[in-house]
Length: 69
Image (cartoon, one colour):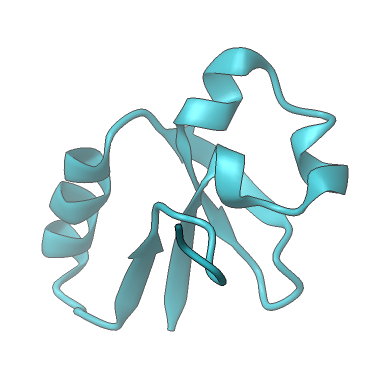
């Protein structure tokens, strides 16, 4: 399964290396949660890319998991 995570939801160590723009973009991550490849500016760009691949085995994480207020 491919996982895409918004920059501001990545681990703090990874976020420290991203620019303000990078925190708002979506990154494909490996099984360790580290970004691979180039970022996608918008969620719709990921959906279009996945539609071209023709494989629906992916998820997009746009919020931190855990406690929500």
